[in-house]
Image (cartoon, rainbow, N blue to C red):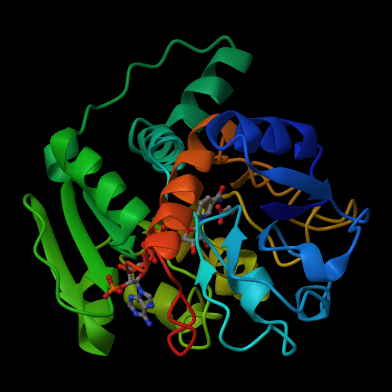
Length: 309
Ligand code: NAP
Ligand code: GLV
């Protein structure tokens, strides 16, 4: 069977090797070397050029290298009727949870203040506040949000979670719907965004939400840049509504050299590498999906195009 791999990352050879290690019958073409478009059975993609997938007439499944499919399903020419399968991978999830815990702990234990003290050679013991007395809100309780919320609860934070449909997660105070967002935001001293980028969630991290949050709250966005209204974040940091933010994702990536976030003292930037799908583990869910498809069984993790995730 023939795979087409499309991504601007330099991992093509790794994916190609991992695919043929797990299914020796897979032959991988690496974009832009497509070969015969009608011979491609499956595509494994990250932000493919619009129109490319429509040029492959015999596609059976489209696999996303990433968990988020916004950069894929926004293509108006996406071939109708070809299921899009998003990445659900234990390693990807674990990496995201590690990033969330890292950023939450940095804020919780006020790492920036200790760094300033050290730079000034200042010995200043600080009052300790335990995690059990700190409230963290998690927007999105899917594969990643649920894992991160559970881990934060295991660290004894008071965790509030928000999803579209009702959820029950041990140790997490779960809310859903518009009213639920208000309930979470109004208590969250640290708010973590792990939502998919959809019509409903675009721009959700905005001044109205920041105004609901306790004064001096901290924002962590590891989902997509399109969730954040950048000017509203800068204004909220300026007037003290928010005390800081950790951002892994941006509207424009790479973040432009002259972007004000780079030099902002209260913004911590990482270059969209909170977590990555490793080819060695990611191919397992791909192989499983192909097996299900070949056997006529439901394919796991197919994107609901109407919901956008
Ligand atoms: P997922 O399993 O599809 O979970 C999405 C969660 O968001 C679900 O709980 C869903 O609610 C909730 N949700 C969706 N629309 C909502 C709405 N309108 N209101 C309230 N809740 C809503 O996704 P995932 O695998 O956890 O991934 C989440 C996102 O993380 C991805 O889409 C991607 O953007 C981002 N990500 C970033 C990185 C990185 O390196 N920075 C890596 C991986 C993923 P229901 O449970 O009710 O459906
Ligand atoms: C990365 O951003 C992903 O969606 O997996």
